[in-house]
Length: 242
Ligand SMILES: *Cc1c(COP(=O)(O)O)cnc(C)c1O
Image 1 (cartoon, rainbow, N blue to C red):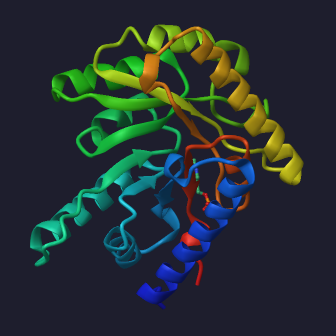
Image 2 (cartoon, protein in one colour):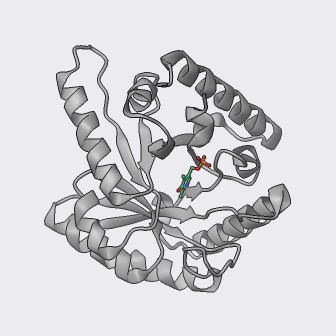
């Protein structure tokens, strides 16, 4: 059964309340924390409802799906009769192979999953051809699980130094995925690690004022991520749950 618009709005309201509570506890401003809705677990109608509810940062974890969804949403916006303008901002959050960069680049504004300089260079080359600038985040494997994507903690600073020399990408922050096991304490340790790395890079003035984002926290651990300084929460299931 399709998810009703009401259900989506309820989920969103609950998440916003949780974020507000976590911000209060951490003495942070809610303005500094945004929801990036990862739409892979939702249907297209649910994505439309979210956009109309004001959540304009939307994400996918697979290149092909992102391209298809962005096209479908663009077509819907073009047909839509409404005074409310809608401009979705698409984020790529999953592993991106270099040969898929071309596929997503026409649609994407932010890539969270840059885990090698070669990928950053490929995005840069494509962005330059399209005469656009793409925001990128370096994905760091803070938990050091062998199966997990992301660059090693020890390699991130040097990668950041090289990434900022590319003209058509803008390094805006770091991203990590919490551990598959280890519960809240494991997640917190990963988030703290990312924040410390972020502060280290920032203290060396790499990236300048644009370097300000920590993309961490998903449905199971986003309040914890807020406590540790997250500015972008990548939330899927909690939004689309029945
Ligand atoms: C799916 C996905 C999310 C969202 O996960 P949920 O548990 O559904 O909130 C966040 N980040 C990445 C990289 C994902 O692939």
